[in-house]
Length: 378
Image (cartoon, rainbow, N blue to C red; front, side, top):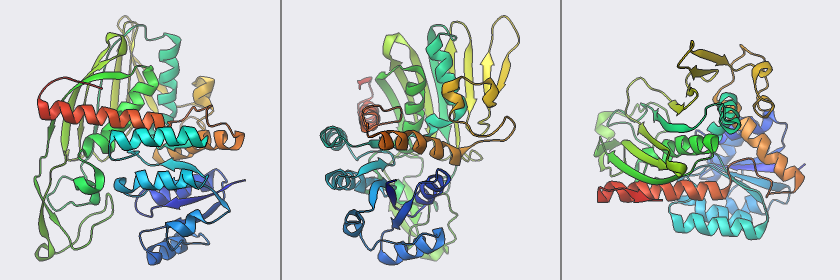
């Protein structure tokens, strides 16, 4: 069985390590931004090795799969190098900083004939997979429109700071790219409809943030004394609303925000069909709302006994035993490693580099739409 290595030891790297352990996959080690961070993370996570640098990781012959949870600006080069070393790659989103880079990575992955996946884990909530089966079977009828949001509050204060707020580290778009692409990937994967045109309105709510001497971890409170904070101009979006045109004439809209007090990590969608509607909320992930016109509405619980077989295979606990955020990574990696073990990267049921490229193309269109105050084609 191929061993894995995880690059990045901040918020999401340990999530990858935990999910791999739950699947029984061997982990060779981790790589942080310095040898000391690597060593400390390996010790904290109970792993035998903290790599000194990226070269050392790639030279480890026991590693066949590399998970990239590093800052966005590093993804392009690191993906290139992993594929060039003949190893499978699983990259956190966004895949790259722009469409030129992401298109190049799609072509490189195809030539390498290796599994190249992007971590759009929200697809793997069981009831999102169930919604996909309902739509594919025609139970919703014709889809009229799709609406929703993804809102958080971890960047509400001007003293909230993280590398993601900086365009040079995270990209010109932040809330849209960081969480909005999760929403976009989810609804497109469920409905099978691609977004083809966008009209966007974005806002940097806090154009000045106060940066501590050292950046804090994602979702962690900043305890730096006010006298140790430095004002930093911010150009990335805290908020955005986007009108959507999907294929086949379906309409939609969604809102993202990282400055909505009280919303810790709330993704919502509502899909309105001619026969019924479906709605779901990530903060109540074990309930799928079914809207009816001529009879009482229903709530479908996440119970394997009630789900379609394609959704049931990605749920591991009986009804009433909640499955949430960490479980989505386990199920995403299950799908990816099945393709790795089968040696068939073309039999993809997981989000691929091509999906990651499409999301960056969407971000590019959204940014152009906002700047030019018009509809933009994807």
